[in-house]
Length: 443
Image (cartoon, rainbow, N blue to C red; front, side, top):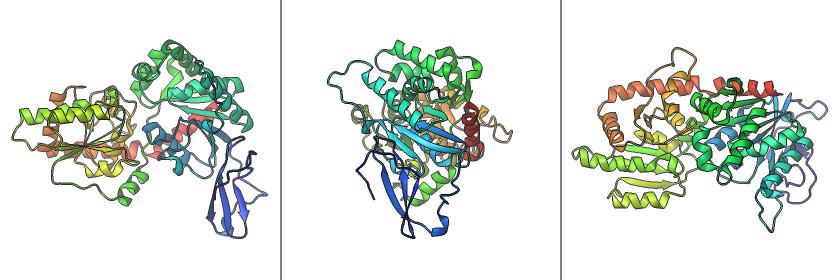
């Protein structure tokens, strides 16, 4: 059921209708509109109004949208798996919708800036940003938020001043090495934004980076003290990955060795290097069967990459799949996953491939080289998990693809080590409690 009227906040999550119906509300604070979903439940499962649960900490998680990228998936994972005995959760979005939006748990209160965003006739620099800061501050005060968890530097630019004004502690998460990500994605007024980010991170109760290299880069780039930034890797939702593969039809195969590459088609994702490597295989190893490549994802460089593929005569080898809401079935169906990125924080597609037993070929970026230091236990630490090639070297990538196929013994050894790392050391049960402890420590 959808309710489009009214402005007042819905009080309480469960509105009982008759004996067997209860309305689960994604609650929206004024003036945002609530979306209500009606589900049948058994009477004995209703929460007693006289003795409701009392979470210890109300957390506001912040992300721009739930369009389906890596940070969005990690935010959704936390919304699903943070302990309800410890936390009550709110979510602040800049934009509603996205492929992951309907998966938001029903007990999460959602606030969306676009629902009440002011409309300016003249777009003076900073006006929208100030409106976003004000909107977040209202949520912090009205909802009595205990801790803010902001993810990506775009949200930190908003969360920092809002939380400081409302005197609410923050935990900020850095998802990519900022010396690469900020100059490439911050847009105008880079120097000003860098100063604002440095101030916001310095005032955070704790900064989490998704890998050791990202943490070290953040300390250098923002001038942060060592203890201000800790490294907690992205958790792997093994059960969700397995369920996604089991519930979806496997993509059609044609007998060729198949490589999948998953990612938004932007410069830093390195798709062109993979395309050149497939052309190089044809030239250097004419008797080696040409593999098939699935490029899963979309983005501003898609037309340019399609033109490059046509120019190199690779239309029969490279297939542009486009955006898919869940890439796990494609990763599971492939013979290998290629990660040709020029930089990454802690790539989710690599973790999914490792968990599914799909061998990985990756550029030698810092986070890939640091995988051996992620696990705490000696069983999973310091192993050879992925095949590595020099960053942006398409000739070496071609050699690695060929070697991966003709050396199954080494490939199997990497598969087993990578699978154990993803399913044991990076499992939700190992990583989420560390994030919970960090949030509670900030309160």
